[in-house]
View (cartoon, rainbow over the protein chains, first blue to last red):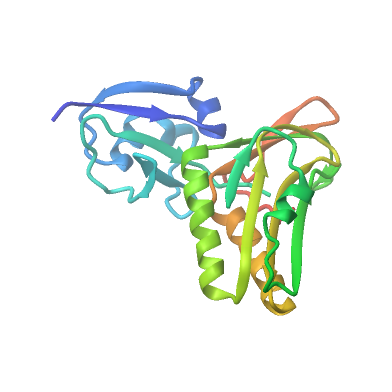
Length: 81
Length: 143
């Protein structure tokens, strides 16, 4: 089913996507499917051991169901400190 | 308290927040911007945070430290924005009745923070180039 998903980008992902946020109309059922649909896998193959994803400001599974209006953030390996 | 800030960190204020009558000591870790990484001359670091989730995850880590160690208080502050060599990037502190718990809690918080909290840094090099640290295929030792 088609739905609208907000995606915010930080750091590496913002550079890759060339923007810091967008609203996508998509049929992607999960964050994993959304990541593939965005075509980022070409430049930046999904490594689920190193990358994480947040849905609505909480860490989520790559296979969690996405719902209309969700906010998704892809999280590259962190480097605080 | 865990806080993300784009203002300079005041270590004295951070320390005061950990004072407690039952505390017999206090340990702090300060992460500073150094002038090199992996053989390259670094002139500045740029930190970026997914602030909402970073503060939630940071609070979770502090709560874990309180559960695991006999501490009085724990706190951490992380900078965002562009920092110069020598600037204070992160401050972590723990007060406790005895030193072992304070050292252990401080170590736990900085290690977990680096591993789990969604903060990224871009290194700016002396030759004018820049790169995100911890990118794909790279393991970066703690700073």
